[in-house]
Length: 120
Image 1 (cartoon, rainbow, N blue to C red):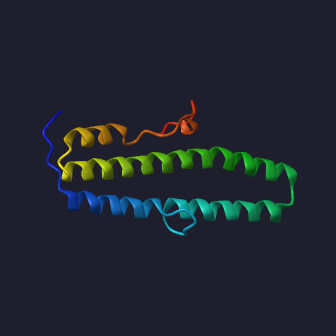
Image 2: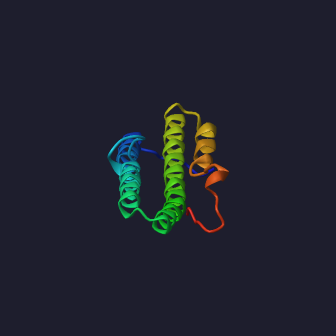
């Protein structure tokens, strides 16, 4: 393992800023907020179009892109958690646990792994 030199305050600042860009479940900000807005807008478009083919196309569009966006949210959330856990372990002097948390950062559940979608 390489030598560690972490500034916990700077890490927390970056994590907080990144979490803001991610947003909160049910909130109106960040990527999650944009996903809610897209979902509401697409539902309205489908209702307004009142057309089965258009509704099917919109459903397929959302199915694909919400899977991609969900993977992005999952990977970002995993990275935030891993970085936070690694920094906490570092501050507590547990470098082995810090290294383990760091190695787990960015791993996402298998449901977000799709042959057609790259999360990297």
